[in-house]
Length: 67
Image 1 (tube, rainbow, N blue to C red):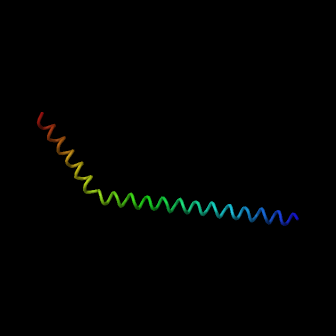
Image 2 (spheres, rainbow, N blue to C red):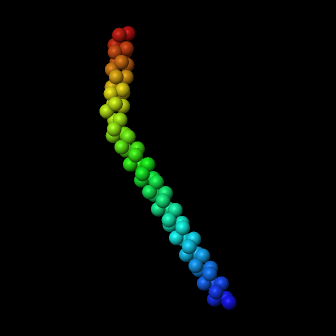
Image 3 (cartoon, rainbow, N blue to C red):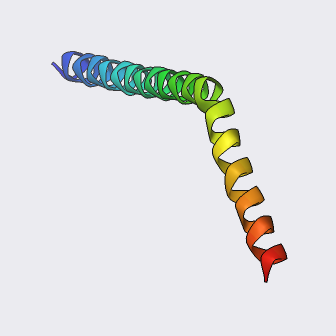
């Protein structure tokens, strides 16, 4: 009887450990996916963002020079 209880407890611990490992892998995959999407968006929009900041910078320089 004691052996069955011990075996059941060990089996429950193994299942719990495997679920925690599975959850960690799922979170890692989600994080990797979000990172890939963020990098892709930054690469795709990089030149447009650079253009906007260049325009802002040149306008600021122009306004400082006109005073």
